[in-house]
Each structure stands twice: as structure tokens, then as C-alpha cells.
Image (cartoon, rainbow, N blue to C red):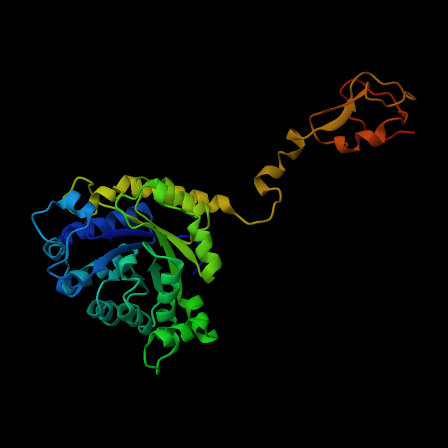
Length: 362
């Protein structure tokens, strides 16, 4: 991955099942300057049982009259719609990405659409078969870690390491642990996996974000770490970039007032554009770790700094003292750092008040 922060505009299911709205979301993401626009790929019956209840935030945004399965079924896009989205992304010069929630969807994204990268969502971090399928596709994986402990992340990484590095070994928990601890497994993870810190709530309270967990994850796993944001506004993803996030993912919608589970916790197009702009500004401002004068400020050195000058008129032969020497702008003469070395010496010529001392002294 390059040093440029990758910005994923998460369209998700905010198309509400409409291909025309999905195309407008691609336009909005491209116009905002995002690198990637991401959707969600799933077969509803393969993901959600008829007994699954809605999350609290889903009840608030969509009511209680339908089940989670019925709600999600209306948000499913078929294969033809996916192909149309991929083609339109190419036209708008923005990368297409999608999150698979079931094994069939992994196969479709990899084998039919040939996506560059797979996103595994937080809810699937304990779904060993899906993790294994993703890794055995050979595609790089972005793994969200909402609701997870470090131990659960390590277990998931073990499955991915196994999938990438152990093609002919029978899957098992022990095999996953061995793969994670092996040089081959660690090398595969380093080449292929990016972690995203995340708080899985919509919208997520600021007090629950814990951005410092990104640093903990970097130290624990030695992998690139980004941030998937569900807070209101743009301040937290921008702060995450300042803290070193290499990827930012943020939900967006054409209209926060639309019906559906995720619109309320999403940015509108103008806000998405402002987030991208702010991230790019912070990214440019981060610079390198060396503390050196910036090219743009060098010209201001002489103007802003000071030189040793005569505080009063000084006659030739007069002794330099705190009474007749001071420091004033510009900084084109002797630095005030050398003031003490001048004291007690005699002027070798006359100086008028405010004239820079040129160093000729006896």
C-alpha cells in the first residue's frame, strides 16, 4: 500500500435496493475525491436466519413491523446490478469494492468481478469459513475489528495466515495457531492484511471510539491499521489520520432522511467531500518525522529572527556591555546567541543606534 491514505466511501446498502440510487452514490463518491466506493454483497437467506431480530439502531431507523431478514432482503443487489456498478465505477475512475457476507458472495466477487481487494466486516471476524475463503482467494483483505478483543483479532489473523500460506493442510484451530506463528504465515499477513479499528454502533458515541486502540493494534500485530468510522460528522476520521490511520472508511448517503438502517449514521455528499478535503490536508501536514526548517519558511528566517545591534550610539574603543548592546530584527547579522562572547570587547569603529554589530572588535 502507498503512503497515501486510502479513503473508502461506504455506500453499503444506502441505495435501498435501487440501482439508480447506487449509481448516484458512485457519482457522489467520485465527485468527493474518494479512492474507493464500497457496497455490500450478500444472499440474504445465506446470511440471516428467519429468527434473527433487528439491532436496536435498526429498530429505531426502520421500525418493528418486519424481521431483520425481511429488511435486508429489500437491500440485496443481484449479479446484474453488481456488474453495472463495476462498469460505472470504471467510467468514473473510482475503485469498486464490496463486502461479502457469505461464501457464495466471496466466489462471485473474486471469480466473476475480479475485485482487487476484499473487505471482511466486523460481524464476520469470528466466521472462520468466510475468513478462510477470503484468504484462499489470494486477494488482499481489509479486516474490520469492531466488537473484538485482541485475542479475537489474533484468532482471525490465524485463519487468514493459514488460508494464505497453508494450501494443503486440513483446517483446524491448532493449524490456524501454527500458521499464525510461522514465518510464512506472518509474511502472508504482512503482504495482504490491513486492520481497521471500529466501534460497531450507529451512530457511535464519541466516548466509545478509543482511537488509541489503533496504536495498540499496530504494536500487537505489526500490520497496517486504519479506521472505520460510525460517528456523526467528520472530526473523528480526520483525527484518526493524524494518528496514523492508513485507511479511512465512512458511510455516506444521498439523503440522511431516507428510510433504511444506515442513513442516519451517514454523511451526505457535501460532508463526504469536506471529509476527503480535510483528510488530504492533514495527510499533507503530517510530513516526515525529522524536525527541519520547511522550504516555505526559510525565507522568513532573516525577517523573524534577530541580530546583535547597538542599543545606543557606540564610539570606537568603547567596551561592549549590556547597556550598549541589544537584539533586534532583522536576523542578518550576528546571532544573539553570541551576545555573551561580545561583552567586554572594544568596538573597533563607531556604531550608530540600531546598527548591526559586524563582529570587528578588539
